[in-house]
Image (cartoon, rainbow, N blue to C red):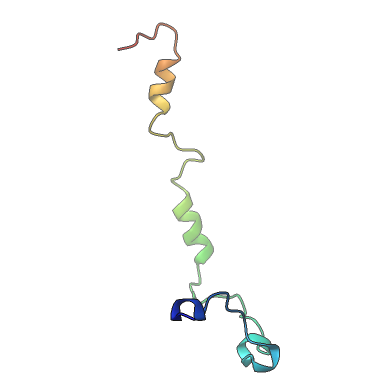
Length: 73
């Protein structure tokens, strides 16, 4: 058996051999590490200048192409 195939298809250890983090410890609180007091205001300020659907790089070309009187160059 080669060393490359030794770990192939490896699974988690049986429950009796798992560590506390895998079995007993509760999951994280989900609160994160950011302690900014005005987080909502900061997020709103960042979103203020964004358009809901910015134009893509081909939008103007397609608009011109499908306009009446388009002449292929």
